[in-house]
Amino acid sequence: MGDLVQPHGGLTAPRSCTVPDGERAAFAARLETLPKIPVSAADLSTVYRFGDGALSPLDGPMDGATYQRVLDEEYIEFDGKRYAWTIPLSLPVDAATAAKISAGQEVALVDPSGRAVASLEITDVFSWDKAQYIKGVYLTDRTDHPGADMVLKGDADMTHLVGGRIRVLPQPKNPSFGQHVLSPAEVRELLAKKGWERVVAFQTRNPLHRAHEYALVYGLETLLAQGLNAGACLNPLVGETKSDDVSAEIRMQTYEALISSRAMGDGDSDAALWAKVGGSVPDRVLLLGLDIKMFYAGPKEAVMHGIYRQNYGFTDIVIGRKHADAPYDDGTAIWGDFDAQEIFENLKGDLKIHPLKVGFAAFYESAGRVDLMEKHSDEKPVFISGKKVRELLQKGEPVDPRIMRPGTSEILSKAMAG
Image (cartoon, rainbow, N blue to C red):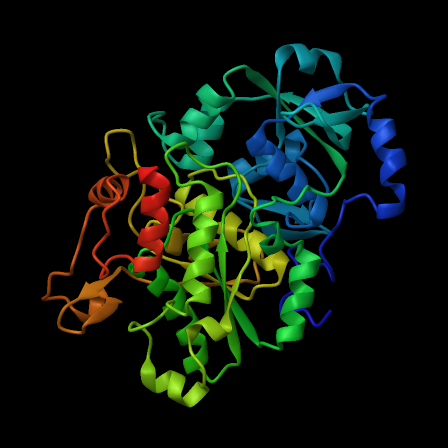
């Protein structure tokens, strides 16, 4: 395949658990004969990522021993070696379901619409210590934050976890942006055709402010400045997110417009570097959505974001200030601004992808562009709070173009004002 980086676990290719085309009709019919376990929309994303290899080297949700090792020691074992892993992934079930299933049994996993999408050969059913989970993943005993809400409110009735080996039907394509969502094998093939030596992925769950955009530009330019033939991937989450996040359909429209209008990097990129390299930022940026469950787990989730991207073939991932961050309900911080960068210095197992660390960026009048704060320590940047931005968009008013590109602002204001 001409892979840029090995899949996680030292594999030669992502570990696909998707049912082959010729077997799908018979497989779907057999699913209807099996006991059913419902899966939430958020956990359904994880089921599909087990299916297409984005969670390699795993072939399904974790058993109790693997779950506990990840929670306590932050690694998995595969073929006798340790690989970094920071959030345990097992499927939650309620007490009534747990009482009816056991190791060795095969069940069907059912999506929220009632459609059976996968089989699970159960290897373990075990109780869910939610307090221990929250402490291990979020590094806090407090429960007034979005991550704890997912466990204690969203999964309030779930008392047990299930592990096993999975086989999955292909994920249906979203009609609005399905062309931008590919399997790890498909992405690796695409990257091989590009011929890039390095590719940096940029994770986001929000529409891009120019400061967010600059983190991607900075990551790409860092690799190009090293003399590498490099590319970048704007790789937003398109799965289940918080209710106050902008929908994936609208966000994907903003990303498409940003690249197709060639606005990305305009005025904020290194003109001398691009004169040497040729072209401009949009020529080296792919837009690919990623449907994964968001945990709002800060440092622990940053490592998981790296694992996913390594399996897709990316060599680098931008890790910025407050990566995957969500504060306590009172607005105070759970983690330090750069804890998500520091965790990569103390991994407990192998991880091939490189964290490309970026500091705080903003628009500075002296430079006439977005730049890193560390270069302008004595200057106050142009700043508008997120709350103010939302208020402007809801009124249908434009956001200061120094903060957000006009094309992005226009799409968001039409959607939010409507």
